[in-house]
Length: 231
Image: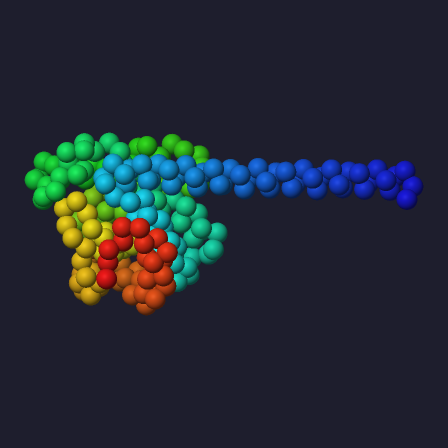
């Protein structure tokens, strides 16, 4: 090739190398965000004497449901990465309340409910997409489909789809697992509860998507089975 062709090839190669480096850096950034999210979430779970596998199960089940409901792969993956942050606000809840073995009294319950606002406040000013989605999930995953949840009293599609899905996945796993204040529920009792709350606490389509995919859900539970004590 002549000098001009050589120069074009050189420019092309340099541009390709720059593109590859940028892709590597972007992937490294995503990996770092994922690592930070799981480390933070696991720290919260450790404070409440739970395994970090709870947030992994919730994240994987949430993505499964999201895809079942037609969410595109990219958004569902961002959702999966953000979902473990749903209880990040519990970092500000006193140990005496977080790990109380019995039922919380009204004052303690009010304090516990504050974790939704705390989680939102921790994450809301981030410019990173994963943390922005995590902020909404933390803020809204205790809202109810029919209203009457907290902290904003939202209902229906006023609640983000990510928070609505997380609410179902979180309750499913929490009921199926041992906690400091309870034994794990049998699977049939968990399913009965979700069905009873369909249309009330939970969006019916989300409950149906979970129940229609129980074989896949069980595989997720088996994969992250550390301290998972459901039937």
